[in-house]
Amino acid sequence: MAFSQSLARFSISRFLPSATLRPFLHQASKPQPSQISRSVSTALTRSPAALSIRPQLSLQVSNPENSAALAMGGVRGMKVRSSVKKLCDGCKSVRRKGGKYVYIICSKNPKHKQRQG
Image (cartoon, rainbow, N blue to C red; front, side, top):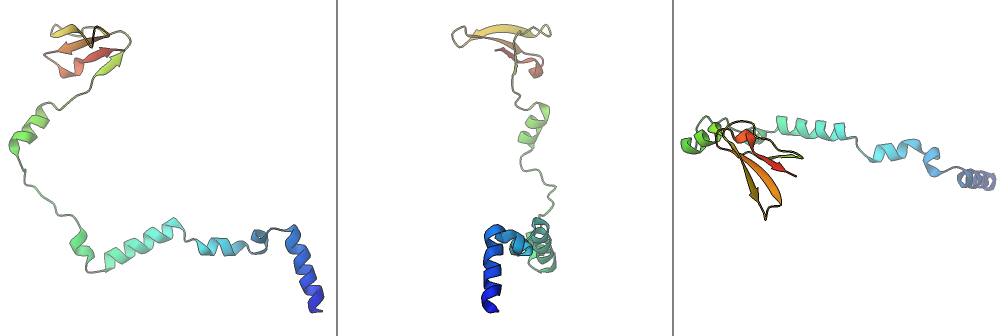
């Protein structure tokens, strides 16, 4: 009787992959991402050390000169266009990099900077 059962298992396992015989084995070995994040967040909120990890709110400005300069006008990039055009009377056309590119540089509005490419 034991011989016939082992023969039956052998013939079944030869035709069916092992995943179909044990479908829940693969799912149980890997925890789901939501379970991991839930367990980590639960552990962090319940531990007393988690209170020291939280960020502190700071209303102090480190250097008022730097923050004023950034608020006035930060560093802006250049628009790359196939045909550049002067957008206001402060815009001027400049050739740079050996005459390869035509740049539009504006003294009034930094948003008008363009490069022909």
